[in-house]
Image (tube, rainbow, N blue to C red):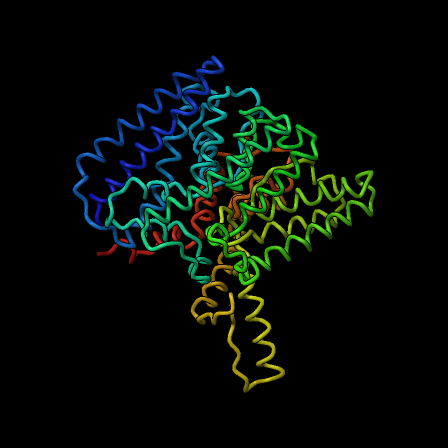
Length: 485
C-alpha cells in the first residue's frame, strides 16, 4: 500500500473536519453558551494534526483500490475519534467510548444516541452533532475528493464508500470525479436548503430546521429534541419530513437525469418502482392496523403516524413521532420487517437495499421455473431493461446472507457481553448495522444506548461502520491477503 498517499488523504480529512467546525463555533457565539472554546480547541487540534500530514506527503502517488478500502475503513474511525473531542473537552460526554459512539453514529447516519437529555446540551455542540449527518450523509470521503488533486484516484475512494448495488445498476454520473462530486453535493445541499425553508415556513426555528434537515435528507435521525419530531406534534412538519425522507431514499442519479429533463427514467428504473411499491404496501398495512385497532381517532392520523414511521425505518432515518412499541403487535411486526429493507442504492440510506431484493426475488422465480416447470428454458434477470450478469446476482445473494449472519452473530455477542434480553440484543445490532438508530426493547424509540457497556458500544460502532460501508469494504481488511504486497 502507498502509505504516503494514505497519510496525505488522512491529513486532508483532518483539515476538512477541523475547518467545518467553524459553523458550530458561529452557532455557539450566537447563543453565548459555554461550548465555544471546546469546539475551537478541537478545531485547532484537528487542523494541527492534519496540516503536517498534508504538507509533508503532498507529493503523492495514485491510490490503488486497496488504498481506497484502507482509507474508507480507517478514515471513518479517525474522523469519529477527532470529532468526539468537543463533547469530551466540554464534559457533556465525558467518556471517549460514548463520544466515539455518538460521532460514529452521526457520520454513519445511524442516529443511535447515548445522550439521555439531548436538550441539556449547548446549541453549538448540538449543531456539530447534526452536522456530522450532513457530512456523513453523502459520505465525507466524497467531500474529500473535492480537495484532492486530479489523478490521485478519487474514484477509488468513491467506490470503496459506495454500495454494491451501484455496481449492479451501473449508475454513473459524469466522467470526471470532481464534477460528479460537485453534482452530488449540489443536489444534496439543495434538498437540505429546500427542506429548511419549508420547515421554517411552518414555524420551526432556523436552528431546529437546519438540524432536522441535516438528519432527514441524509436519512440519519438526530434531533435536538428528546422526543424527536414528536416534540412538535405537527401534521405539517410530519408530512414535509416524510417527503424529504422519501427523496433521501432515492438514487441520486435520478435527480441528475430529472434536472436534465429526463422524467422517463423514473418509469424505467426498476429499483425506484420497487421502492415505491414497498412503501405503498407497508405504509398501507401499518395504517390499516392502526386504524382498525382505534390507536388514533381518525384515519388521517393513522395514515400520518403509520406512514411516518414506515418511511423513517425503511429509509433508515430513525426519526420518531410516536412510541411504536405501544402499537399493536401486528404493526410492530411489520415495522420490524421494514428494518431489513433499506431504500435505493446510490442514495443516502443504508440497509440491505431494494436492488438486492429485486435480484434475489427474480432469481428465486427463475430458479423455481427452471426446477419445476421449464427445465430447458434459459431466462435472464433484467434490471432497467438490461440483462444482469450472474456475478452480480451472486453478489446480491452473498450480501444478503452476510447481513443476516452478522445480525445473528452480533445478537449472540451482545447478549453475552451485556446480559440483555434477546430482543434488545438482536434489535441493537439491526438498528446499528442497518444504520437506523432506534430499535425495539431497551433500545426502542423512547430509549437510548447509554446503558450498554464500553465493549458493547465499540462493537455496535463497528457495526455502524460496516453497515455504512456496505459490508465488504469494511470486512475486506480482515483478509490476511489484504496486507500482503
